Length: 269
Ligand code: ARG
Image 1 (tube, rainbow, N blue to C red):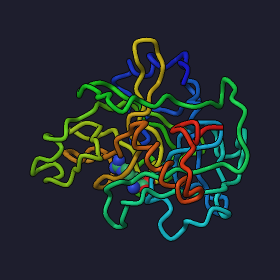
Image 2: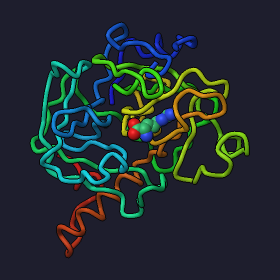
Image 3: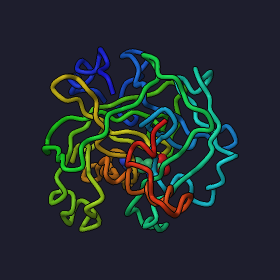
Image 4: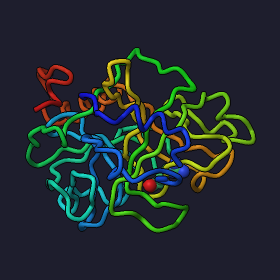
């Protein structure tokens, strides 16, 4: 939620090429809300810290693997060795998510034990429900996903700068031909070259405000291969409301009545 010193420098690197086409974050500082979600200790997906105990990620990461006890979350820019590791207590998939569709591709993941925030590990800011981001602004994606389509994966967190693309453009026939729903957001470049890729799913798309506070705008969800022309990355649109709704649904099931939890308060801690 607080600013990171080198953020604007990385935004300014318009030529910033991997994740596919980016940079190793070792060169630029850290992204303190980024987590790796691992199944049997193998990196599967990214996730973003939104409180001391909750991460947000993509629902498709948990397809046939929704059992929390096999999952762990690690923090720190290197997968090996991580700077902190936590087991997972609960996985909450959005109730409207249906594999193999990509709509409502969002999940909340609860850590077994809270993390103490430091300058290197802390939460991101969530946009207000009413907040809309202008198109054409730059945003940053981070992850340990493949460096090329079906290619090798890095040990060090990678980052790249992408541009938000409006949904009308993204729904054009030569792009995704109507597949972009209101829950989705496209980002990248129609000319290709820079994109998230396999293994980046669930990770953050963030943008800074004028005070250099970083906000979660989207969650890496899908794309046609990686970094191809006219096939930008597709992200689950993020808003506090969306997260609160899933949290409420989850908490309501646990505590049917009375409904005493106040929105994020019930998710916090
Ligand atoms: N779905 C892929 C995953 O599970 C990554 C999707 C992002 N792809 C893209 N071209 N932006 O990791």
